[in-house]
Length: 418
Image 1 (spheres, one colour):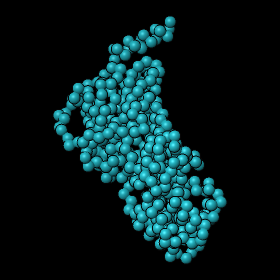
Image 2 (cartoon, helix red, strand yellow):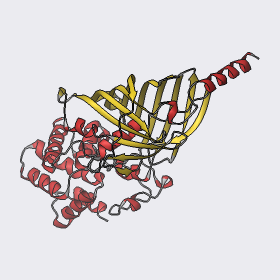
Image 3 (cartoon, rainbow, N blue to C red):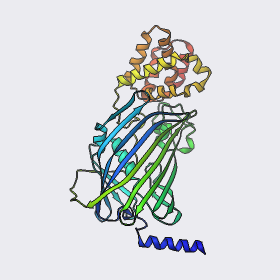
Image 4 (tube, rainbow, N blue to C red):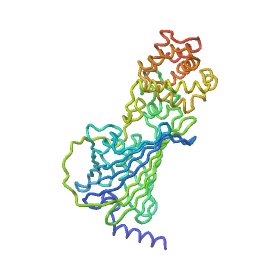
């Protein structure tokens, strides 16, 4: 009896306060709302635990609700960013090109139930900035009920059209959970091509269709898991008072778990009558995350030249050689190729074009020291595992021109050229 009474009281409180779904649950009036925003994104490995870098952002977000609760214009402002890298230390600055790209307004079109329909962004906006705005926008989907309940909502990742989420409500405090196992046709071929994989229907010189036919054909080590935990605090008159998010996206290889951890806090500052909404030059775009693939894993955030990547690859090779690891070690013990040094090596090599690979090899051929010779041998052993078109063409060049020394290396490269 007490349970029934509690449910009735809960349902009555819902009917007297905010709506149960739709944009009005978060923003009950056609007004503009200002929030303080802080976020921290860290990248590194979970096994072993090692953080490589942190990126923080703080500022404000202006939310303008109009068009009968079907459209919202978001504008980030007063942005301050900072970066910490274990390789380069701490850097703090107020204005950067990255922050300026994020401060371009964008709009989100919502369905009647509060699900996101489309985004509208600046036509000159870089892809990485649009992806961040996609991620921010997906926090503004919410359903209100009593106790524990489920909902089907628009999903950020292209693998899923919709996602099932779990809610736990306690009055005006609502927690929202979702977890996804993400493996798309692009993730198998592009996302971590810097890690050696095993495809049952692999065609080395083929395109993505040859490399990957579907989940049943994929036998590689890759496993992407995304989890998110959000807590919403609501007010019956104001709507959204605060939002706290912790999200973890994991990339699992044979020996390591690489993770991107996102923490976000949004806190109400003020609201005011809606200013005039001037029409902006925006273009309609997909609501879901878009990846450029392994050729540019930063999605345009870092513009590295081929010379930069070539030099970075050379540094990693020398670093590995200085540890006493040589090509024979790799052949005898294949697990060595999954150390973090080799993951970094494969990542940089996967971004090199054919001329850069050719230049790097020729420079190492001219070297006479033991470390340079060892680096060259490691380069040749790792080359077949990178599996890019540029590496395939370079292997073909090495075989035809017989640039490799020794029958073992030559035979291994020839086997990849079949």
